[in-house]
Image 1 (cartoon, one colour):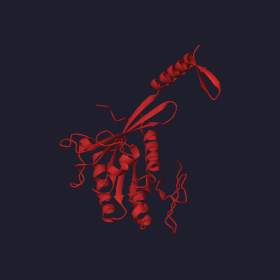
Image 2: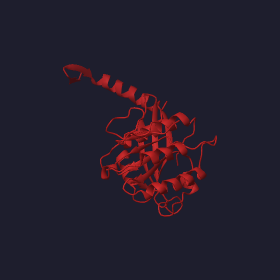
Image 3: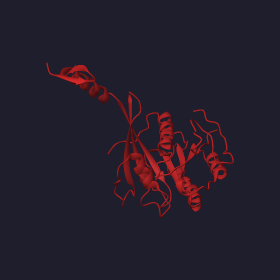
Image 4: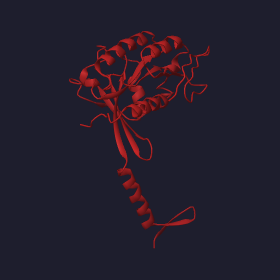
Length: 241
């Protein structure tokens, strides 16, 4: 019998094939979920860079005439039984108009609002984007879709607006906000994990068809907030009541 040796232990080819077959069957038996998430904000705030950093792939242009969006996919092996395909839609084509179309929002189950910390006016724009989003889509019960806020380009400035941003999140049922940087890949994964978890809890069978107990704590003088698994060198603010 031909034997492959690893760390001094002999493993037969038949055994390896058997293991491979079992893994393949387990993989096929996984429940696969498809979630459409919108990434919304003004032109130049770093939406595309955030998406590319998170997915580690290029964007795929959709029909910009009818949809006006770019698309990227991130697959998460969530647990032993679940695979989640995150469909990220970037508002290319909507940036300058500041208006979301119904077809762009259709089937979305979560949203990422993005503004540029070095340009305070883009935070004001987020307020308008949010109103437009809430007018376009909601969960079947009328609740807003889970939404997070990213204060991007945190590597380029030490200025933050924690009190104002916290108030905005609390007043508008936004689940939390993160100071991020696409350049240094800061807190992007953490933010997306938090949103995905909320979508998974809420989805109840709502998927994009294919073709925690949190305590509100305002930041201290150093600008650090609090939230689940918050680290001292990261700015992550929880806005749940």
